[in-house]
Image (tube, rainbow, N blue to C red; front, side, top):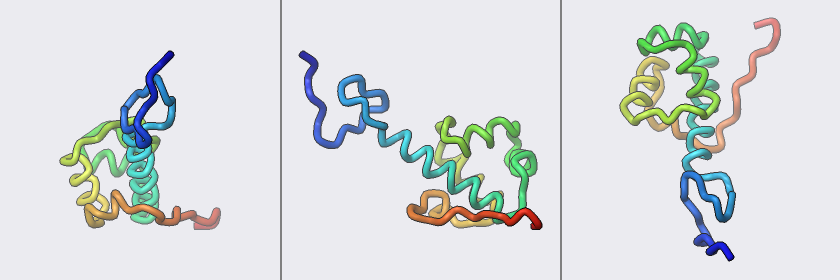
Length: 102
């Protein structure tokens, strides 16, 4: 019989409780914020990647929550987008949607 996890499991890949890890939640939160802030700044993924000195696919992975970016990288992202570092981690923000005519 497998052992039980703690009430608040924070394992990156927990094979016992199989809940989404806290790390994955944070990556998706950050990725969604980066995408929202990038669009609000009027930048394409390629333009943001150019400002950061990375490939466009890195920005895509960051926005999708599949990249595990360092604090330094996220600081550079905030500088490139002209936002505060805290905005990268903001919770409960609404996604910015562009109308088709914009």
